[in-house]
Structure formats: C-alpha cells, structure tokens
Length: 137
Image (cartoon, rainbow, N blue to C red; front, side, top):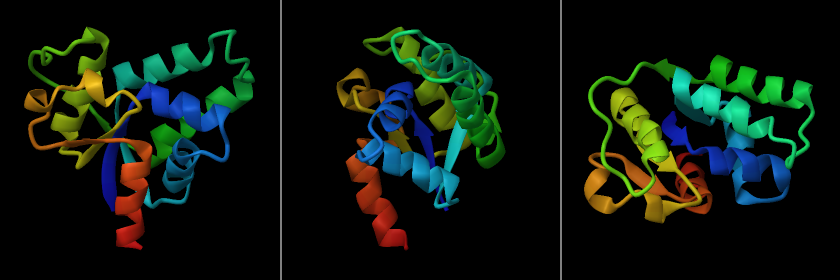
C-alpha cells in the first residue's frame, strides 16, 4: 500500500471540489488504496483549518474526516529538529514523511518544499500521486 503525507491544502481542496484530483486522494484513503501518515500536530492543523468559517464545513463533516485519518492512517511522532523550509509551518509535513518513511508528500504547493529538503520522499501533486496509484491497481 502506498504511504503518503497529505498537506492540509490537499485536504481542503478535496472537500471543496468533490470532482477534483484532491477529492480522489481522499477517496483513495477511504477505500484503503492509500495510507495517510499523520502526526498529532498535523491532525490539529487539519481540524483548525477545516473549522475556519470561510470554508463553512459542518462540524460532523470535519469530525468524520479527522476520524478517517486517525482510523486509516499511520500515526507517528516525528523526532529531531525541523527542516528549514520557505514556510516554517510546512516543516511538520516533511518531518512526518521522514519519520513514517512515507513514499510521498502530496501538496498543492510544491514550491514550499525545495528539492534539497526532500530526502527520500517524493513531493508530488494530487494528480501525480493518482497516476502512481493507478499503476498499483
């Protein structure tokens, strides 16, 4: 099974645009084709961002998404100092990817993850990961 860290922007886009690639990533998690790797810090960010009034997600929808990530995901506790990235808030995702040995970090902002910081994880868009999932099934 493919292991991936899912950036918050992918999660938000997946919920806002049900016909988009990001929504298909969430469907792949739900169907067990993709195992999300998460940290407690990431889950906190997911919940906080999804609860923002501008998105107008229902509390039960937010709870269901967080529960899905807890149930289907691999929870890790990253260690060590965070990598230096253009947006320091993104470091938790790369730390999680390294700690969980995820194959992919899925984001809508690849420019926030300079290639020299990636290590062994491939930073990809939702569409790129869908192409790789299609090869597995």
